Image (cartoon, rainbow, N blue to C red; front, top):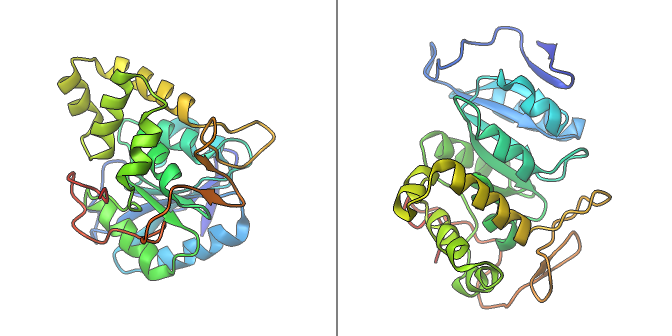
Amino acid sequence: MTEPYDHGLTRPAATRSAGDRDGRHGRIRVLIVDDHVAVRAGLAGLITGQPDMTLAGEASSAVAAVAGGRCSCDVAIVDYHLGDRNGLWVTRRLRQWQAPPQVLLYSAFAGEALAVAAIVAGAAGLLGKSAIGEEVCLAVRRLAAGGRYLPVIRPAVLELIGSRLQADQRAILGLLVHGIPPDEAAAQLGLSTLELDVERAAILGALVRVPAHSRGFALASSPLHYDRRRTNFPTDDRRRDTINHGAGDAGTGGIT
């Protein structure tokens, strides 16, 4: 049973108090953010069917997901293609909560370009909507344990993306992509956390073009382009959507 909450966000009627990660059963609290009723219902059924997970809430829009910062959760599954804002916008704001959840960005186009942008925004995972339930649960558990779940990002792609940035922004990008937490990255670069946050926003602005009338994702300025129809990257023998199932620590995080 759920009750209306924050103009589009619903949560179970018996929600545990903030900070109660372990609760009575040590279950992972999951927030679902998607503007499609069927997708939310499917994910909710999957989550509630797991003995180690519980549904913390559901949001039908980006604004509802972040309103008030009152939904206590450990992992947020966030659709990239939301009607009012995109998943990167939601990710940045969820990560600013006093007790921020780990964010698993969920998209039909979970490729390398979106993976880089997701990392800069603060997400710890990116998963394609074609993933089966078992993989969704694996990703949620890995994020709840402090790990990451990301597509493999090839060095050539990362280098091409970095070529669009200033030197100091490339340094920030390199640290974030390789799993260095933002506060540690700021310390290594002699920046305040606020200065780093400003630079992260600038990096996203340089990488991402999301017109108000479009739900698509694109990296500004060809030749590197990612949209709803196709991905046009330099290719090699590896599948673009290969998921790294190795250790989910703050090491390579899927970077090869």
